[in-house]
Picture (cartoon, rainbow, N blue to C red):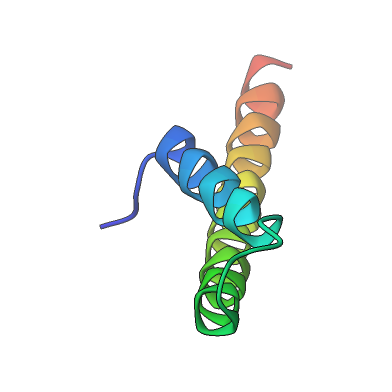
Length: 62
């Protein structure tokens, strides 16, 4: 089961915020980076799926 797009974006924003913390320990930064990459992949896949759905609906309307 995939997460809601808004949830993925919220989690991605939090991971990016952790990455911008100059006082964060290296281990936390590495973890946040890995999570951000995973979430970015999820968001890109969801966007791809949504584009496909929009294209399908558009074809049905024409």
